Amino acid sequence: KNEVEQSPQNLTAQEGEFITINCSYSVGISALHWLQQHPGGGIVSLFMLSSGKKKHGRLIATINIQEKHSSLHITASHPRDSAVYICAVRNSGNTPLVFGKGTRLSVIA
Amino acid sequence: EAGVAQSPRYKIIEKRQSVAFWCNPISGHATLYWYQQILGQGPKLLIQFQNNGVVDDSQLPKDRFSAERLKGVDSTLKIQPAKLEDSAVYLCASSRQSTEAFFGQGTRLTVV
Image (cartoon, rainbow over all chains, first blue to last red; front, top):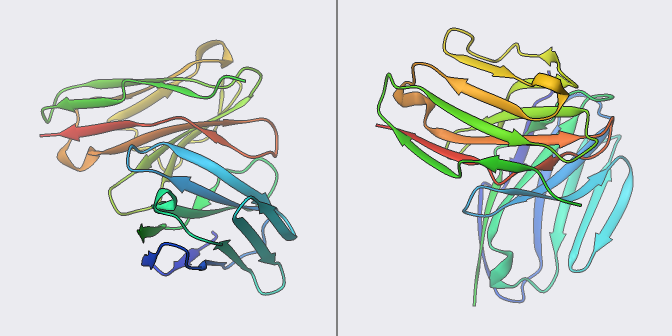
């Protein structure tokens, strides 16, 4: 069974700061997801990665398959980025996602 | 395309009562998941459906939880009877084969 660890658990940043959230997993995967969860509970998928790097607006996600590690970066952070960011991995095919515990980000104006 | 729809958004019940949650996945998504997310933790899979068949229900507490996906579209998750520790957000997600999963808004259950 894959173990997914995220760090940090909690993060407070000033508006405009560059933010990095890390995710490591224990077993080889077919895909890694970065998800955003706002206080209401709904989850939005930000990225799905199997290799390399993806960018969407101010968000960048990278993955190193050999090191079993991924990072989510937010450039020029804004208070509306405040949310819980969750890393989840899929071992193979259509197996269910295994989730990390999430990183709670608060961006202060 | 329309997203994953869940209802109700919030539910408060007393322990030992019964409750049911409903999920309507994205049209054409064969795979449907129910997750339980306890406060401060990541979501935990309860059950996975492929069309109307169960793929994985190993973590579903079958003495009190049940789920069905009749006709391979909508799904319901039921808890009967509820316990205090069932207080959580119940998330439904759907996906096509081996693609990203799309999540509903979740149902926040409080058992008092």
